[in-house]
Image (tube, rainbow, N blue to C red; front, side, top):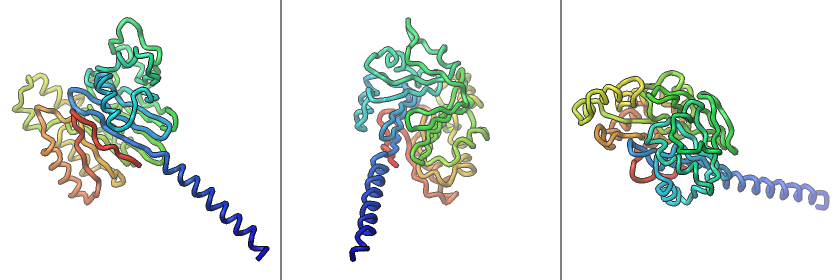
Length: 287
């Protein structure tokens, strides 16, 4: 009996240490939420236990604070703000955020995007520029940027990797080239654009020049292109698909939901589906 005591003690210590480590792993949760998605303003949020990133700032600072608070997060605690491109619905709140001295967030955007934004009298001090296609680390989150086909100066999409979870964001793009399909592989969560229904767009209120822009290869994804991607390229490991940036005039959430559901069922995928909205945050997805 005496000789067994050290082994029992070691086994107890091993189990205790393992329990502590497992508890630490459970405490570090990867979270993702689409705060707003649409032509009136876009923003999303990703975090771990120690790092918080805001993607785009197409809402006022007051509204960003409100929506972050609704998911128990604080704008003051955000470590970084990543910008996809300079269009107003993605950066309208950015100059005010950049001037606010109470915020610690560093602003990240491509080298060509920075000069295209009206910062006011003073260029922000907390500005970090990167080359489109670059990867970099923010806290414990690995960020990969990739170029997208859109009529902006130097637009990008992003993937985020942390704790074995990968999140992809690809909105505001006219089509999905092979390079983007490559970057969106092995994503657990994917935010993908489903901007317009072609028939609704053609008979809708937009001037013909705007319709041509939206339908072009540097415009926005149609429901048809989104469906083709789901049928042919969506990775089977993607457990959650969020469709966003829906046009209020040229699309409808139930049309998008029906088309996407049919495509997922045809593939036999169990991927959960959500439609991001303009007026309220999405569910908070936790891993």
